[in-house]
Image (cartoon, rainbow, N blue to C red):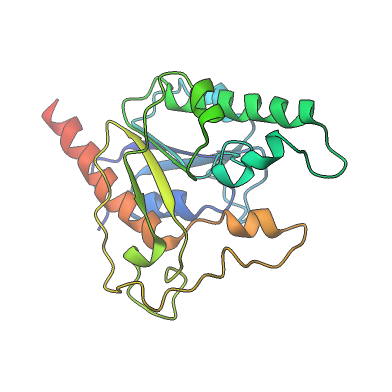
Length: 221
């Protein structure tokens, strides 16, 4: 059901349109922003550095998947022994850049902020301004209703929340049939993109729950 009082929503670091379109479907004034072009060719996509538009009067900022390779626990080993063809200086520089982006988004001049990211290692946490532990972690299958659908997957998703409540799972499955295809994605140039894709069930829950929560706050103000 569309809302008669739309929120101005920014979906950062997204070129797939999954989360943006979930908010649009409910009637919100939603826009995505990424350095990559929109995969769906939408005119609701802003291409560039999202930090340049954080002060445009948004009601809610959802960061779908900021660059996390150097921030997450799974990649901390490269800070000691870089992969072939790379240097330690490059690894630590990329860590600083990733932490700076997360910091700018987490501290954006927006009342309601949600950032999705994997579990972080201590070097990343030390570099993020006003760092707080993630508010919750969810699995895509918790928002799935069809065992054969796209949401019935295992992929721990951590959410950092400011001004927003934790998500409440909406699915009907228990995780016993959840696939693990995200972790076993085939090597190749598109592997990182495919592994970072957002799940439609979680996107719908964000739009319904956070959009509704923010509207109630706006009306009460």
